[in-house]
Length: 134
Image (tube, one colour):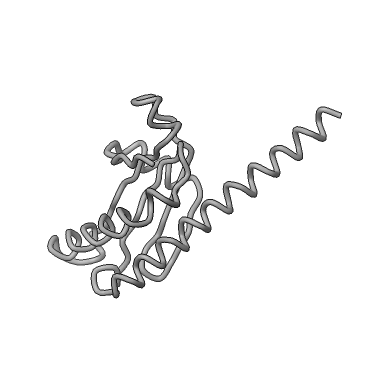
C-alpha cells in the first residue's frame, strides 16, 4: 500500500473529529479521506500525518519524537492501514524515550483498534440499510 504524507491543517483537524485510539506511547486518529488530490492513491493508499506538541519539550525532543513515529510507521502502515483513510500520529511524553519495539507494538494495536472501529461502524450501516430496504 502506498502511504503519502498529510500536510494541510484542515486534514489534521478532520482526522481529530474521526476515530481515535490512545496507547501509552502514541495517539492515532483517523478519518475517511475526502482528498481528491490523487484518486488512484485512495483506492490503494492512505495519507499519514505526524505531530508533536510543544508540551513534549524543546524542538530536539519534538523532532526525535516525530522521527521515531515515522520510522515505526514505515514498518506498520504499509501492511495494516486501510486504504482511503487519513491517519494522524501524535507523539506522547514518552515516545522519544520508549523502546522501539514497544512503539511498534503500540502502533500495530492502535491501527487494529481503529480498523475494528471502522468495520463495526460499516456493519452497523449495512444492517440499518438492510432494515430500511425491507
